[in-house]
Image (cartoon, rainbow, N blue to C red; front, side):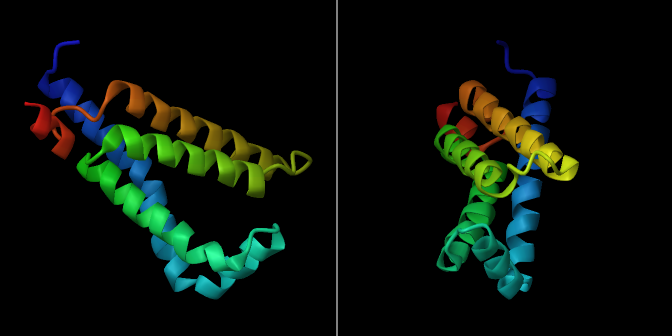
Length: 130
């Protein structure tokens, strides 16, 4: 596929939109750390993993934004998102949780598409390939 300004802009916008969810969530978990730990513990996830979760959300999101090691980070973020769906959104009797589960599947799909297609030229990876 020919790299054009439009495809590069779309790739950048796609990376920004995918990453925004995680950067905002990671930042929010810092401010509400005790609540984050309590929520994780409620679902059987050890609260001691909260710093790792925050790091994945913030660092993974930022790496996606700048497009560094994009394919690898995108696969990791897809796995992280699928794990979040599995641990926190499998109460399908609750319509809201079912929607969150499907949202996570869609986000994971976006990350996998990013891994397959690459970040575009307007990224650290794109500059290294040029």
